[in-house]
Length: 528
Image 1 (spheres, rainbow, N blue to C red):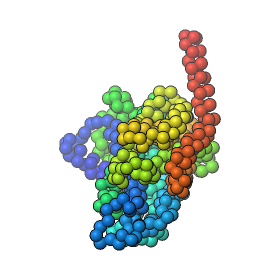
Image 2: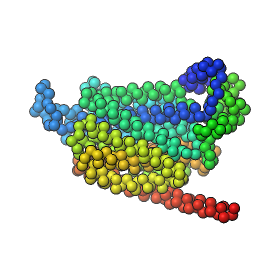
Image 3: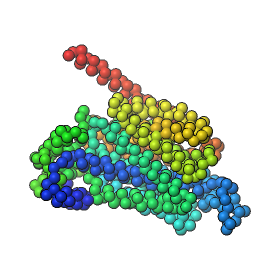
Image 4: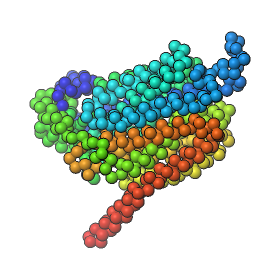
């Protein structure tokens, strides 16, 4: 990587650390760069979800039962929809609110397939930063609808579609960056913890929207829009897309040992091995020397080697074993998750006596369960090596949990809280695992041989297919809910069954491989 290609924020930090340490600072370069990538990508996707969550909360004030609200003295009480926001004040309000979700999510799904190809062939730093800035602009514009008094349906649909397309840059970008820096060892646990950004973003977006919903719902979009734009600037200043660009060790995607570890001995070994890549630098090396002096030519050569690697095509990606099965499984897993994401606050308000703000706050417990589910799925996969079986077990348990929540979720607050956490755990666990550890593993599959630049393409195929399901779920939930909310839950349970069916072949393969591995170990032990 050319010195000029190193992000300006990294160059400033290099100068500061060298000045503070008298021109030389010795530390585990690989560890600190990996930590930086984890933090930056975590903040980035937290902001993506933070900015897409408010619509699910604001629905409750765009259309509500005005007869339950005290009438201000200056309002014409003969209008039964005086408290609603046109054009969502008619009998078809549920359908129109569903259309808002669909315009975002279908545009997101289309953009996802495009973004994977673009991300694989361009600088991830520019790709992510520009996507976040555009997402911030369009999220802010939706909030301006309140400030400017806009009541045109097409304005909101178009802004939502543009926001959805812009947000499709996020997932291929952050997963590819993580895939470039982290290898196979403990990937499930690392991704399980890292993937909590989705739920944390949902929680923060919900809390911001819940705070402003009764005051000025436009601010529920404006502030998240400013936040994602600000973090996009941080990405532009500090994101290093590829470890070889700054003289760090590339991860081992196929070996039994990860190049990244927190132990000091292995950290030193990691640095020593990276010295070979960048021109036999000493193991004790300062951050400054990774981009200056005699190492500069070697770094540029390493960067050009990466850029010359051929990015795979769409047809080659779908032939990777497991891509099609996990893609269709994710279609139904995200259908369930995103129906909760966009309709849970409205369902809670409709089935209980809670206010719009209280319903939004209670709905965050679903995302708390999602954090736990992602971590649990990652740990189970690391321990067993069977990602498909892990997903299948959690999907299977989710079916009765959905049924129990539909029956008893509105009985009392304590029951609702417990069931929301449990449902979130088993619904979001498979979704989190497939979109992170599974996608990255398939994107670095052994069958790719020399073609290493496949993570973004594979991620885009899997998550793009899942995003179509994410669009279908909320779209159907609107009109189906008019027949009764229980029918929405029947749809979700049926989707869970279909997700299991699509995963069955990979589950069978996982189980056969597990028994084969155990038999091989027994054979080796008997020979010893």
